[in-house]
Length: 128
Image 1 (cartoon, one colour):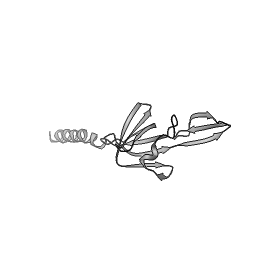
Image 2: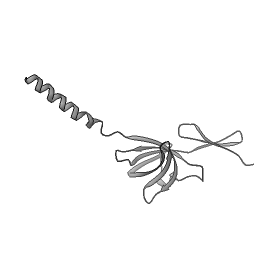
Image 3: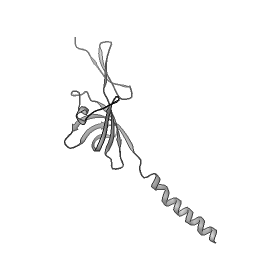
Image 4: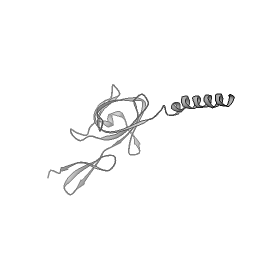
């Protein structure tokens, strides 16, 4: 009888403690940065989940290449030419880290815009 109580108590403790270890699951979202609201600490992005407004945690680490940049550096280059980024969110849904990319190259008479993964996002002919 004592063995069954100990086994049952161990099972209950295991079942109650298991979710505690999995409680914090950071989420990463990839998207194009459409607008930056620096004063409000928010950015609007277009992602595969649709349009999102993300709040930036304080502090929020923002990196382009190997250099830390400010929130102002996230703004669009021009209409239709957006930087993309990976947004690491905390359990409250706030961005705690942003890895930003903006890579443009001239290739065969075109300006080619690449995403953070190296895939072609856009090609536009050069005006001569």
